[in-house]
Image 1 (cartoon, rainbow, N blue to C red):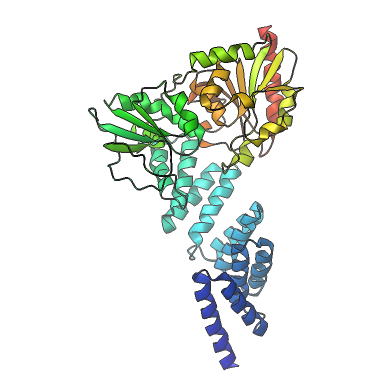
Image 2 (cartoon, rainbow, N blue to C red):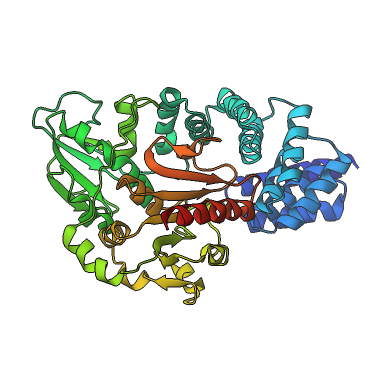
Length: 451
């Protein structure tokens, strides 16, 4: 009996070694062989569950790990059970598993991950301060970059900008960093440039670029020669700004002479932006010739509204922030003409009985700006079009999820970044119906007063 136990122990060590080397199939076979001889071996059950999770079979992972837990209560078992539940989108079960892991051992090997995931859970529920507590605990235990990053989003959501910008820099230390290129020139810290060339690097989504391009005039005040790297869809739009040169964004560092570099979204931190010092005057404008071209196409005596119901499907939070065209049908009221500025595949959802489709007219954001210039109002979920409309100082109603992106903060109906923007918020997660009821009511009043 003793020899058999030693054999199982040795086999488990071999399996763990293969597992740690990423040889999942080999490790799986070893764990199964162990369980053939010792069906109640909790470590083999647990680790087999972990492999199932890693291979994407989360239901079987839960089954195996739960069986191990029934035989032995363990913090690491509960922690990995939580990860499997997370992968299935079972948030409540995941949270209970993480809580149980921390009750058993508050400092077990992966306690920082349990706290990190609980931070996400409580943020999604709207318990922002509890989320912050868990992110802080994750950082205390492991200095976990993902926790720093998520902490920054919570701090900014709360309007605690000074702390938030500092933590926001952890976006470059995440597992999937905002930019993993290695720059050979020094990063700009805000000093006077005296004609030196600075390379400003765009990052993240189109809306982020549009929001933070507002800092170009402040960089120019430092007597800088500005070279901007941005996506091609934004180049024509941004040419109206005080930029000396624009290059198209690629996976490599632009081959242009420069003395310093800075990422666009680091600029608010450099300029010590708080709620009282956001540069929020209109800073983008439509090309006059393009605007004139669209004027005839958008000719209508009715109140002209541009609509957008979904953002870039590649964005990690797109399912939460986006809705469907069906919801916008309720806004087709007497006296209103709806124009769709929707691109991506979602544009196929629209019904021409309700909306004029402009998707074929839009090649880049300069076209979008020219269309916006000719409309009376934009109603959009949280997309780059909402940002662009706000940046132009044109009226925009932005429709937000229960816990929105940090820049819209909490509870307020206005947006400190865009004075021409009005916010409509979900009252509970996924509740678009009440949002559209509120929008329709306000729109009816607006149209009535106009007529």
